[in-house]
Length: 422
Image: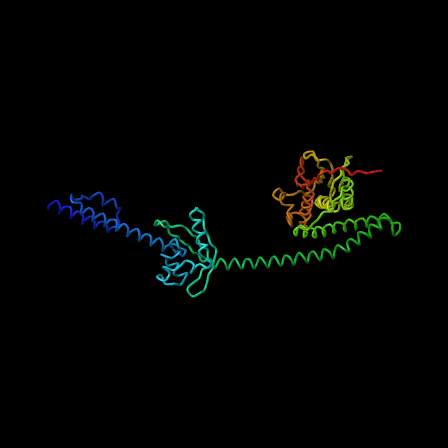
């Protein structure tokens, strides 16, 4: 009897201790099981029940602390548990939610969707639904639903984490509306600039035609002073026409409608003629202006008008940013680093380009703060045109081997010379 009494006293003490938040191993250390085994069985059953109660309590606390609404269903989609967040979202009483199909709360979820969800989870693939949830009063809200498998029993359960994204959706719609307005404004701006550019190009073309004829003597002999002024006007008109064409071509590039009218032409002649048209501007600044085309006879398959504009842009920039009595040199030669290409190099000893801006000067609308203002389109358009001819444009500052100036060069593939039958 004394042994049995001692065992019973020990069990009561330990069972009392199990109600306190101490680790389970404390119980096993002090247990002295009686010979009959009855007391031991009762104690283990009580310990397991307490442990299960603790686990259930921890599970409930975990469920309630989750920010998202949580709906736990069986494998068929019937809700078996939910947290208070789900009750707040769906505006149902807690008990009313239990036993209802998940399709009642998530719009569009049917048997086929549930089958796809179960298949994804079995294959360990992430499942996320962007859809709409329905409340008890019939109102809806946009939501993101993440779905995972909850292996608490053999059949498994599905866990739906529902997040209300109404605020984010409204912000996204407002942003999309603002973007749409900006795009419409940009289209209108582009159309306006295009219309103005067309209006400018017509009189400029007429002026260039008239001045060219006057210099050819159509209206009679001209004095040297008159010829000089007309050449200045012709150069300015061509430069302005180049800017207008840049704007028009930029719009075509953006809409991917720019086309090339290619033909095989002698390259030296094209570059020399284009560069010479800016000689008057160079003389006004008393620049040492040199054009070196060498004796090579290279043909290039290109759009002559557009390549001429590239040369005008590069040489015009060199003249513009070179101080008075400086030097600008235009050279045409076969590219020593790329076989089968001919290279045009424009060097100047001007103010140069800051190192942090060299890589950006070919970006649209980019201008260097310390330099005179410009449209920021010339080099960008030139780079696009050269690329369309399967070439490449490069910028270096200072000029290699020097401490000042800028070198801008571009290369184009050499074409076979045309065959002439006599």
